[in-house]
Image 1 (cartoon, one colour):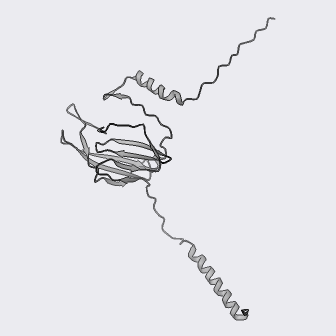
Image 2 (cartoon, rainbow, N blue to C red):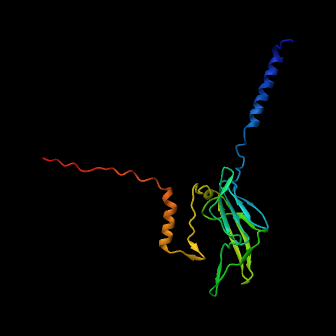
Image 3 (cartoon, helix red, strand yellow):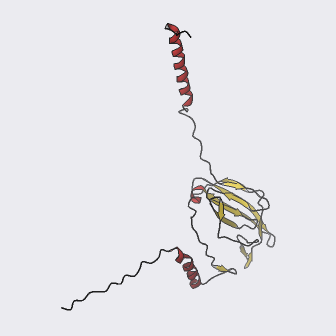
Length: 203
């Protein structure tokens, strides 16, 4: 191979330099490129037969056709919950002329999903579903808001205390005893008692 001399070698060097500069220029982002708007990570999965599933990075919520919202903690690919409602548990009720109405049935096939506009966080999802009570002929709209920031505060360890029996709130003493039964195992052990007695001099 012949060595390049004079103008030929200068042209080759100049071409290499231009290619290098052109590559660097292409790799640099445009200074005035528009910023990408932040998008909520909350996902909503439709299931007409129920439940409607709302997923976040650390938690999951199931909305049943009766309007009950069951919460789960996600950890290591598993779901954990202390919330174990009955198969026909109602999520809410209305009182009309002294009569309690709890037979609301919600249509989970056509939820309205929008971005949240509340003050609890900048990102999140709002889910609205409509329902109707057959016995009272009432229509109801159930709204669930899930915020990205708040789901990060989902407790790592949580305990559920059910203070209602047969739709009746338990008395205060019973509730306090139940709370202590849950809290006591979580408390640190008490320090050992020190046997210290005052010393008296016989003088």
